[in-house]
Length: 204
Figure 1 (cartoon, rainbow, N blue to C red):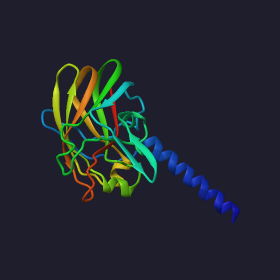
Figure 2: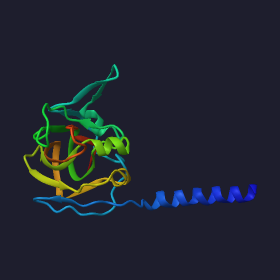
Figure 3: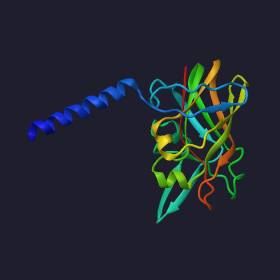
């Protein structure tokens, strides 16, 4: 019995190591109005990402629940943790209350950006993911003035946790910052008006 257990443990470890080495993940399409996005395996979360010196937003949600205050700042979108999220704090209700809210990522220098990974929604758990809104389209503006509109698939919680939606630029854009503006959103539960982005990572 002990030998069988040991063999099963060894087999499980070897399987995990093999999957990790192969990087077997599934990726959803990201469509760009100006540039076509290609769907191929991309980097692990934040590995080799361009360093962000400062993350800021046009609004950030702060709420009090059961006497405790919780904040969801822009820095949550670049902390390497998809269980945290930037949540916009615009006032109002309905699908349009998040329109025009922006997330600005300032790099620690000038880089040639060639890829951006997106984990949209709040991926802390299935309930929070399905409850809250997530971007359907974002306007992406670089420090050199180039701007593009991306449309995203409406992924499930499992799909979002498993892998990001990746935009491969047609050519590298030299930039010191990039801004993301919410244009349209996928709805969550009725009465929940907050739009969330768990993580964004830019790569050379």
